Image 1 (cartoon, rainbow, N blue to C red):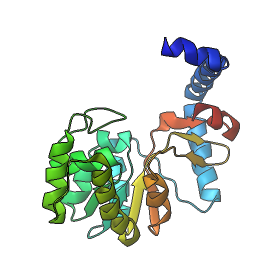
Image 2 (tube, rainbow, N blue to C red):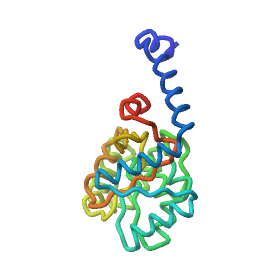
Image 3 (cartoon, rainbow, N blue to C red):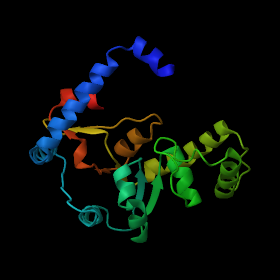
Image 4 (cartoon, helix red, strand yellow):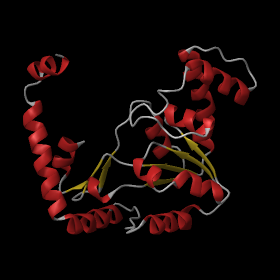
Length: 218
């Protein structure tokens, strides 16, 4: 019922979905050229672009940029989850903080995310309160607003002391080298803007030909 009502309110949605499917199909058919074009565009924008063909290559490239002994703030990135990036960086003496609220909670608990959009949906607020109380040394009540405020205070300090920010991208426009990053917590903006260095780890399947098409896919 909710889907039917939404489609009545936004009848263009199905047409847009078909356009996005066609854009992705065209992109896959010319992926090698698009990735090369995107890398050239990023470099023309004074950024640095690297193509990793394996997880090991990706980790090696990132190691060369990060080194050790760094404080890193990290936005949600499925690609980084797939290659165990945070664990890898921690093993090399770096301090890494997930900055998505749910990802931060499961990181502190030492467990895997339960859901793509709500990674800590299975963790009761009482357990979160106990966790945050232990970390802060203060009694945090099992109240969601109080817990969110506590995490915000903890992470705000990390954002502005971090040496490096990390994250992913929803889509990349090959013609301009533009990375589209969609968020709802403000953590991506801070991760990418506050630290002096920002690293985006993006799967090649995210690249589309033009910025106009990227707006539709995003």
